[in-house]
Length: 162
Image 1 (cartoon, rainbow, N blue to C red):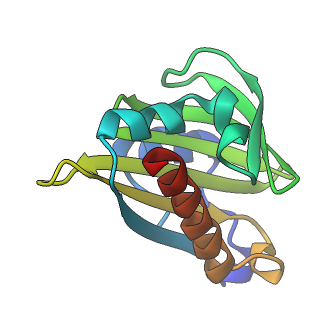
Image 2 (cartoon, rainbow, N blue to C red):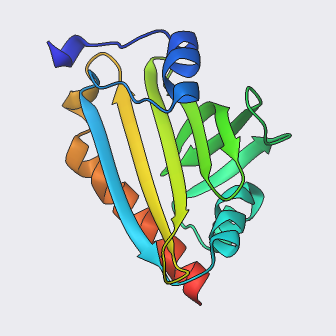
């Protein structure tokens, strides 16, 4: 039953899923959204990867602690008031930024952002995420996750095209 699904351990989720480009397909909450941005891939990557400057264009999140941006490095951030401890899984400049994270001690997620250049020189950004944790679906849903992703994509588009 999805209501009580806790998912794999965070270590397994990180090593066997996130680092291999996979989401937890059994997770109760999953979403994928894409948007084409009329800006070069380098500009879009800089906005996403310069995490300390997120508040300049992203109203819903800010980084609290960030060291080097490389696989297995940790960082702490807040999104809509929720504190999250995350670990980078994939850092491929101008291609992919993926991390795993834990909130409230038991809610686990994989966040994956992929960038690709279109034939017209624009940037397609795809955000994918899976979330699991006991009782998660009592207060969070796929629709709410998708809405957050679409808001993020619009903020990114506005910043990159401005």
